[in-house]
Image (spheres, rainbow, N blue to C red):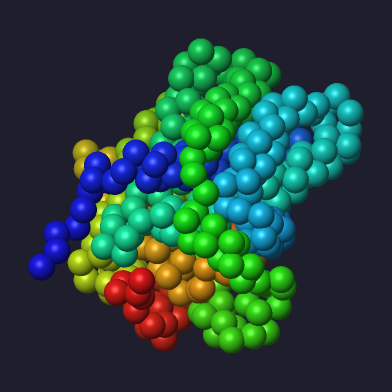
Length: 430
């Protein structure tokens, strides 16, 4: 009986690949969360309105645009990665992504240039979404292709947790900046400096990626001239159509759950609770640390009990706890910090096995395109979760607000469970 190998048992090159992929996915989480953390502060700067709820929902829409553009990026860079190599695709995506994050901090506000300000914000976020869409597929596939099957579960959880690690770094950066730039100073300069910091993890990830090796499986297919000329057609219309649809459906539910719980949490606490900026930053550090560790654990668990069971167990638990925990968080009693930690651990971590689960379902010749497009296709519908939750919560009485948030999460969990049950287990596939 094999014990699950730890990250430390990897070769130096495998570690570089895992860390390079992890850092890229961390930057993805870092940028997305920066936007979420500053939405209450910058909504009036780009979408001024007498109705604060309208400004916040409009700013959330500009955030959602980034997520919706990601499938296009996954197609562009997935095809590029299948034809020219995973490593080249990863270097291009991290460069584009880092500079787009930096550029948000340079944008003029509505008071400076009028309606062009929100248009520029949306355009930068569109570009960012395209580069971000190529990030996950190349990193996940290169990592999973570079290790034996007995290590994939643990590495899958480690890689997927990068997003929550980026979220954690963003929450820490947010707390530091709110201390350095209190009150009106944050609205004037603080939020810009937050986006400028996004270039730092990007440059670190780029440095690591230049020293990585290409995927040995891809090199073999390339040397044999067996690479797929039209991978997208084979994925959507060919033999792998069912796999693609099931993966996209699973991801739709997982994205819906994650963004309907962790991503909306700063706005949920500020709009419907009695929390100030400092308290929210501290709670987000707790929540994202819990989510980060939870994804590592679900990935590790998938190596023990299978990818399907690990995902289903956590989604089933989410259905049971999301409504009561959403209510307990807002009560702000002596245990509310613990409730935030438990909420994040259960509700946001079922995606830990996904890099392995998706990569193992497709052949090497189309794996980058297929895994990346399946993953990002889930964002087309799943990304709307925060907007739907905000709409539901703004239209009901205060005591029903946690119920609305919880029901929204339950919907996401059900969307995950059905296609997961219909999917085949991949844990033992080579």
